[in-house]
Length: 425
Ligand SMILES: C[S@@+](CC[C@H](N)C(=O)[O-])C[C@H]1O[C@@H](n2cnc3c(N)ncnc32)[C@H](O)[C@@H]1O
Image (cartoon, rainbow, N blue to C red; front, side):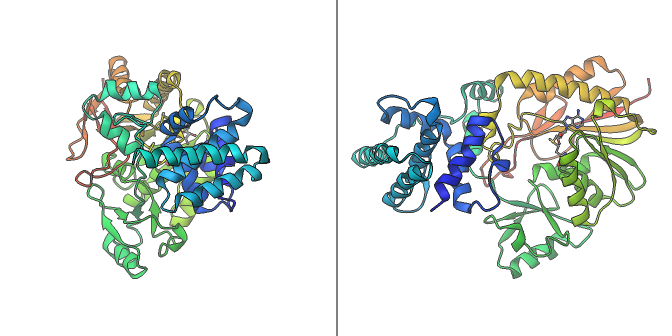
């Protein structure tokens, strides 16, 4: 029963050390420990409120592990499909594994008190309907930007996202891959926005996906699969993917059009290795360049540039709930400045008549249309291009997808796209 200690160790790295959850697990951690850690972060603010109401006095900072264990206990009672006492017993035992045997009674008492109160009220609704389970600063920014949709955005952010595949059309059609999935008893349906996407009915380990190692498919949300058509690609073009790692979009660009000359650049050499691994698995090739974009001095100018800029990632909270704890309000303006600097630099590497796509997985206007507007105000050679598509909504001169859970909409991550063309003065 190592699930809780493993989940708590991973959570300690996120909450105590500011690390991202994905890199905080050990390879041997079980799916249940991951489910508990992800679940705690999805419901973090609500769980904290419950624990606050149950404890006579808050646990000190040196007992962050116990605090997280209690959050995991409440999460398990409310959300795991198993008897409540099974969860309580496992959580109490975990106090021992965390070397705090003295806390067993406390943990047991708090969790049993919660169950009693819950049973009494039939369903103890400590959480107001409107509770967003987001930090206040982010809640305010989202409400300010999208007063009508804010509630749905919070709901979507707190719901586990579906697993979506991108089919490598160089290896076979989407229908062929869907058939192969059917044969492996993996149910899927066509994504409605991207012709390369398949949504899995239930998440499946990549090892179980047919021909995954042979490069027939990749895991990628549908929103990120909308980039290649916006780049207007034809064989022979020089393309710069200016912030490329881990390479999802680089590989998709190469799968979309043969004969491109692509440079995949990233400041982070270790992340660039992930691009290399993806290219190898998919049977693709391009030039890899480890460099800060700001220092990059290529010998040629590019016909097409993708600037998938570093951002707050507030559009992908449903996949990375740790973002709610890792980002700070002051990060947003700092990110917007960096994004504008990167855009100005990328623009200097673009040929006349060339086209640039700026994208982020943020839903905050400060990082999206406001960056584009600031750039357009100072760059007379930049002409915004309309994105003529049926999906999303206009956001300045760009296009925005908001995260959604509705089966009527496309159920994508939140994502922003803008297209700019370089004109002759
Ligand atoms: C949103 S991620 C890119 C995701 C990637 N396009 C994909 O689809 O897999 C942003 C990337 O920008 C890189 N980055 C940040 N600052 C950079 C800079 N100054 N120059 C080059 N790359 C940078 C980060 O290392 C990170 O890998």
